[in-house]
Image 1: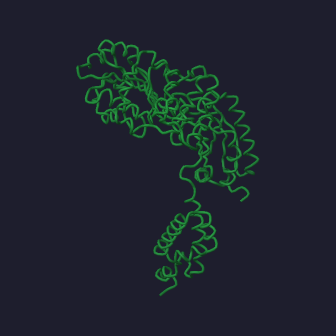
Image 2: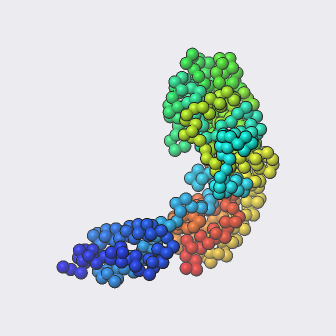
Image 3: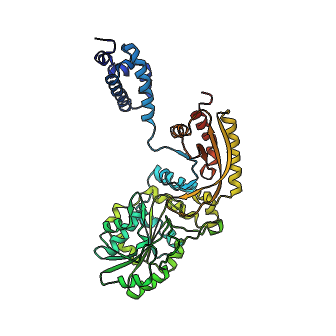
Length: 474
């Protein structure tokens, strides 16, 4: 037997119970669930067995040498396991509606409403006026009708569900006519044709990818036709030699044949942002005013609220959707409704909504204010990083994100951080491991931070994260 014999080292590995009696582990057991600590210890022990089997010479032979090393690894493992899986992230990317980072940030009033709903019981389905059972959908119905001019509304858990429910209710077993240029992929490989197939409706494509005429729709209408569908190109643009049928033309055609018209708006504007330099996007109100029978849109995109799919339109059609058994499967909970109601109330004062709703505030941020914020943050980082990185400010553009306003590129100013003696990718990896994690973007081996999506209250936390990632003061 040699000193590098794996069998000897495997026999010398301490038992889990022995490790749990170590002082450091007893301290962890006093502050963390025993199940979590034991699981972490067993994972570390499994790694040690693998290391010994693969290369025994890299592992101490004596148990007394092993124990402190295993305990140190176990402490780290417990700390990692104890961290919540859903954690706060500082979004320094400049992508306002970053899908991977949770899209819209709720307003202060919406957060307070969620706290209220989560902390106790609510009148979710209880009519306080009559003392009888109520409807959760009625909680935001008045606001949605007031803000959009719709006859009725229904809220489900996201816009894909809204489209699925509407198609399944209005056209299951029948045909839905849609322009070939509008067969979009919503995201994550969810595509309009697939959603339609799931609903039970049969897709009828008309026109070409770049050009669809009114006659294309007319020629496709048959006794089996149930619905004319318009899908707004909220996450892409076709430019050049193009033609699409307007909503007003589609509505007139639907009226001629007695067919309802549905518009999937996707992002769902309630305010016009063209005065802030953004390209024109139809608002929910304009779409409904064009005579469309059903409109669907998201709650967590340009509306600036929680994830939700909002359906508005003719009462008769919306009431049919409410009776569909699928509605229960895609319904929203009390926290979503609380956040959505608070967000909608902000729109009762449109000018104040631009400031109170973080999504709108970020999108309409003044370029001069962004430059000043970038310089302030850069000055803070220069002092905090102790020469471990070159910090600068440069002009660039932000992104809207979330499949909204795909051609918009609002101007901004970036804070650039070029680390000394450390690869920029290593810096990126270390920043993701901080608490809160920091996510930015990389250009030309430089880490960049866009103040458009960084809250001023996070500047100090951002500086601490960079100090730790760069080993300043360590």
